[in-house]
Length: 393
Ligand code: PMP
Image (cartoon, rainbow, N blue to C red; front, top):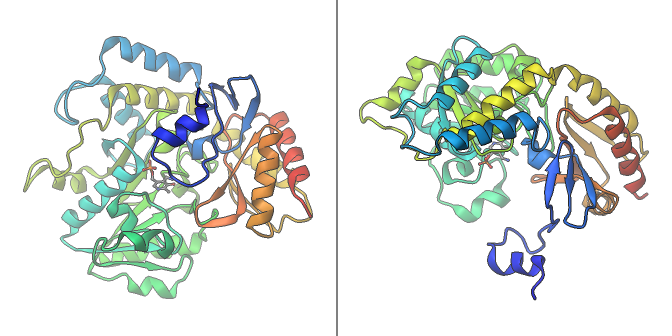
């Protein structure tokens, strides 16, 4: 009989030569359990997905209730489906007045694709600017915005008139002119190894976009939904994007994404031609029901209120002398080690001792910390002790 790992290698398309291959049978709260009952404390939440913890009872209940009523009915946007309406209403109530029109899609990458099309059509321009070490997804449009040549160049040609600039560099803002349809930025960069822009820079970027008519698109696919200690990370910078991108933590563990803008901007996708973006499963009723429950949990359980305190605890307890820097905001942290060899050895020891952590796509010498927001202080203490012990000199 082949093992589960052999079956994985035989029949699922590979993403690397050495998949992590951790076998998980069930998950609850901050823990994942293997079939033999070994328990793992999840410090990465499927990369910022399980913000309310795994299988939150309210999310699971909402999924079951909706599944009893109806599943998919019709290509997105045509029928009246109460889970979509309820979720859009709830989301816009948490956002500034100008972000009042929600286009639900399936994933983060699709939100990026939708926003690229929206920005081009709304401005009549072609240029797209993004940042060094940016990650916006794996589809062709999103890949065109990627700020890393190694991962991007094998797939050329990609979209024309795209270019990458340096984050926090005021000089590079001069490249934003009236040919630019949109500037795409992760409000806090994830795969770069967690990089936080300065408030002054974000304000200058916002101003330059307004001045030139380029749309500012903030990608909060990884940093949204309470992860950084605010519902949305742009709130830290006192700026409002023209288009906001969401996914990952949005569905409480179910697949869903959205691009959100003003009704005025969004209306360009409904004419000349109609159906400027079409998606069959976008805003799936079960995903919307889950997302709606997830947002209520974040609000009712006041999950965001404890995020900063938990950040302080991580920063205090992760005190091994080989840690050179801890970057990030809230529960979106990056623990910088000496090199990738030290990191991977540490990750392996953590896994053996029941702690799941990870690296970053464009920074393979720093450890990712992005646990469920409702991780307890005892669990943080346990995790930090194991991480400190895992770092070899
Ligand atoms: N943008 C950011 C900032 C992301 O972190 C990701 C996923 N890691 C994406 C976009 C793409 O999302 P998805 O994998 O759902 O397509």
